[in-house]
Length: 189
Image (tube, rainbow, N blue to C red):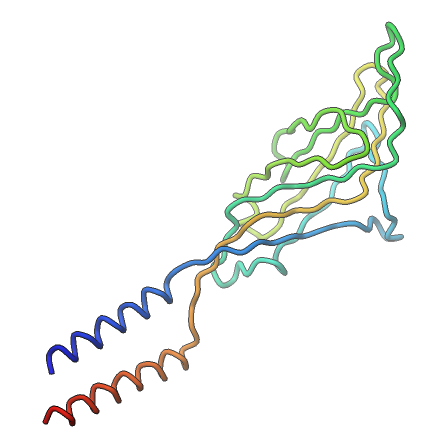
């Protein structure tokens, strides 16, 4: 009888241990339509940064205790005018891009052309409120006039969630264990 009770306790502890484990999953939030007109690409002009927000509250269940473990912002630029080197004037039509998250310091992306560029995101603010405010600036130090066109912005990464079974499932499992214990006790008596 004591072996049966010890066995039931061990099984319950294993089930509770599995219920407390976390599992990882991926998330993606894409913005590919811009402004009230929902245009496909938006211009970013020197001196007028583009500001927008990625909201992950639909992709990550922060209310249940899920949390982001890593994130990257993937920027897809389009409509680039070919760069032109002009002697002492430097580079015409080059556009250097910098990104800031939640009003923090700038992160240099560098000179961009048509293509996709990735920037690591500090996850602290995402885990605080489920959102990240993105500011993208563009500049050309030679001409002091630059424009880049952003086609798509994607925030992607991984999150952890706790695997918590339903209370009814645990109650059913517990009743089954009690039934097995009673059957075992009756059989040995």
